[in-house]
Image (cartoon, rainbow, N blue to C red; front, top):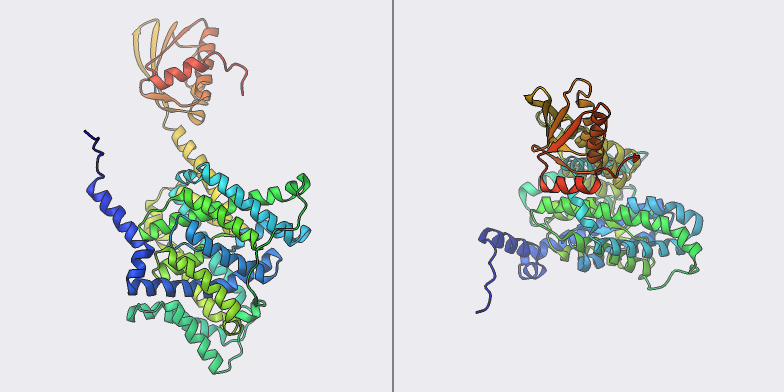
Length: 510
């Protein structure tokens, strides 16, 4: 008789079926309404990507074509390879900051070689399961990440609002008003697209001289070509590009996985993070072979796609890349006329929508533990100060770990519970024993005043590391120096096994 496999719980099966339908390209193609949403979402993202890619190219010190082609290849390839549907990957400021020193010193070919090596590192890290480390990022760090990103998106728009004609300000205000008010009337067409097209037509028809996309840099007039970087295949080259490739790989993975987690929360769907990790690497390798500067997930454009336009499938990501190439190569003259005021309005509203306003409400701050609020503030401060999301997240996680260890350490206490006879005292240790709590354990016993026999009961505790075993050894040594005997009882199986393996072998360790 064949074995009967247990069927999944009905609720979970229904949930998974709903997620597959929401993110299914086939389902979107069968629905005219959903297809329109995906197509228009991709178009809005493509328009928003153009000035961003040009700006990041300038930061990296390369021709605008390098950033634009990178955005095209990243978006198209990640649409097939990535794990998070509807997430946008392209050339980013975080990657540009990492590779800028390399470009200044060694040129474009070394940059391309670095992108390819960084992609290979990301593939290896993805296959090794680096995405599983996401579970160690606390919610307070995630909130800080989101809020810092919103602030950076907003601050990036300020350069388009300083030293410009006065008419730019009412144009931005009109763009914001359209994005806020139009969805209350109709959601047939994404409000950001209406704002961009409307302001472009108005400024062109009225011959209003304002900064445009064309002023940001020269748009390409040819397609990207496949090729190899012209660098010597030597250990010297590897030692030059290796540190930059590793930095780019880590920054790109962290930003991409954090963005994927955010999109999961926004869309109430799940995505395979391991696939997203190695997919980012494969996309960077492809981008490198096409001469691009590499990249990672872009939270601003992703929020435009997911929240602003309502897109949910890989189709919008793919079309964003295709539309980008068509716009800059085939319609470069038209795209160049788009006023930057329109794109500033879109990005300002993206920043407003991205920020977690609930996290800074007085009622929330009063209810939230101070340590959680501190972690969020530190994460925001470091990200904004360094303009590097990865550094901010790492610092935030470290602060959270320290505060958690400090808090847990105070939960462990030594209690005098019994005196069976005049020669015996029983202590009970309550709480978890690890490096933070066990370091103070040695000081909590009365070595001089205790009787000849001391019993330490660990029934309500657990030994987690070698620091605790060393502390117990030190306690026994101190009592032995006073001519007293110590018995340790109540160890659970795991604690007993750890103590048996390490006790007596840690003398002299630090």
